[in-house]
Amino acid sequence: MTTQQAMQQALALADEAARMGEVPVGAVVLDGQGHVLAMARNHVEDHHDASAHAELLAMRQAARHCGTARLEGCTLVVTLEPCPMCAAAITHFRLSRVIYGAYDPKGGGVDHGPRLFARPGCLHRPGEIISGVREREAGAQLRRFFRVLRQRD
Image (cartoon, rainbow, N blue to C red; front, side, top):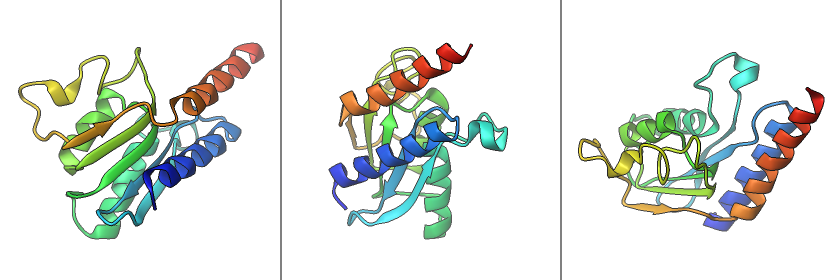
């Protein structure tokens, strides 16, 4: 699966999340050859679990699938810049690449906020970070979701 195909799948998962009342974020983990290891969407509200972010759930699934806690050589494709919690998990899972769509100036942990991978004490830095992939689509999903949410209040 190409990066664009993986992002398309992540965007579809984000749409599903929005339909279920979750913040629209989807994530896909690919192995070194581009095969899908895991896919997930946000389940924070459904699971009553503030840590049930799409990328964290996808990384957990991929680790179980591979039978190891380390996802070296793997790529995380996610529709939104990972938050500090997910960025920290990325370091522990030892992902090689992170590709994300929409920037998150308020809650991001990669290119915004604490910029976890740039910190001197960071345990592991992905070898490659690609940001802004299909950013317009991913950002539009989020804006649409929160606009509808605000209209309900």
